[in-house]
Image 1 (tube, rainbow, N blue to C red):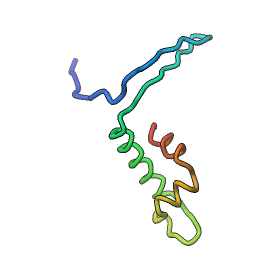
Image 2 (cartoon, rainbow, N blue to C red; image 1 turned 90 degrees about the horizontal axis):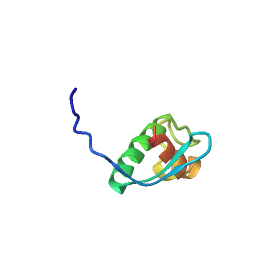
Image 3 (cartoon, helix red, strand yellow; image 1 turned 30 degrees about the horizontal axis):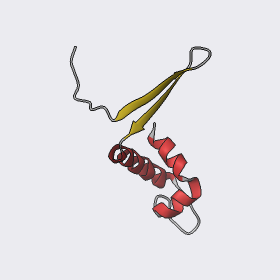
Image 4 (cartoon, rainbow, N blue to C red; image 1 turned 135 degrees about the vertical axis):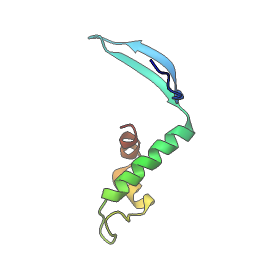
Length: 79
């Protein structure tokens, strides 16, 4: 068995046990890690984005964020 040097990027703040064997975790992720995941997701979404007046993949960040919303970008970064 080998150990990896993966660094923990989150800190669990609270664990709630819910009905039907479900568990809810409340965690914090450092802004430097969140930014790197956001940037990767944003770049991926920019490559696929098509907006009138811009070539595919060349949509400015501000316009993409306005079109899809910040939450969509962060959700994409979570995958």
